[in-house]
Length: 221
Image 1: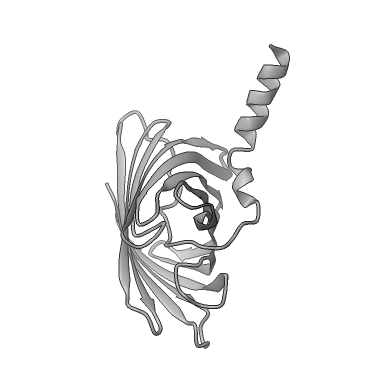
Image 2 (image 1 turned 180 degrees about the vertical axis):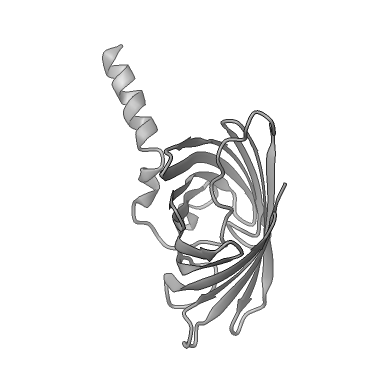
């Protein structure tokens, strides 16, 4: 029994970290950031994020993400995320702790269906200190129809909020959703906020032939 408990503990602690293993690159749009557990006075928290992708030399597309959180429970639905014309449904567990340093992490498991079909473990995490925030969204999709179709996706970013309505920062994504000869894009972001609404512009690989722009609109309620 002791060995079994140790094994389960190690498995839980590594649920977020194991997707960091290297794999054939491929991936998709940005996901919503990890959310803290809802307060007792507001049992459910919802968010809707729509990312519009403008890629040089390619057709643009939109990727919506919807989340619902109730205490520890995290539910999420995505489209055009793991692949074009592909949806995914996710179930996760919200953890959060800290005062001056606020840490939030949501390990998840998802089912992917459409042009790509498979199972995807993932993790959304963030660390906030005063006006500075670091976040990471990642997943590994195990393609159940073709082993070569499995891939790893990650979207790390760091933001600074100098004003209540303004945030700026750096961002990267490891992706293969575009037919380009690169695995990782890097760039910057500028975001505007008003009450429960956010509008963020991401620019990847600025000044190069592979420049792409993501226009993101988000609402929480």
